[in-house]
Image (cartoon, rainbow, N blue to C red):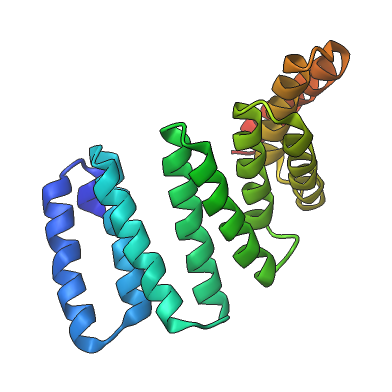
Length: 196
């Protein structure tokens, strides 16, 4: 991981593949899935999108083989699907992005319907819908995320949500609501930056 942060992706991948060999030998399926997820993240950062998506899918397939509702497995599935959804969002493939974010929502809600992971997943789903200008589906997801973020007092997520809500209302020519959400975004952006 450190090599990836330093930009030495060749060394990073070399070490991950060594880890894969050991984990396969030991039959450590969960660790194998985590390593494939890490490989995918490195591949994505290298710009090897297709390879990264294949590695994410391998990780997900391994976790599906485990067939468990243990919190660690569900969290891993949700995180991998979130990563895949984000990869598809970056390439403007909103149908696939939505598919994977909805899978992430299903698994994260099995853990805790009021978690940060659920709120962020609603945010991502809402984002996809905003991008394709489907505000009838965007707004309920964004407000679900906002409700959880407010309960958790997650100022940074609240700021991001207010910005996306402002954008949504601006695009539907509801400028009064857009302005009120834009002002809330500015306020929480300041509050969040003072916390960090």
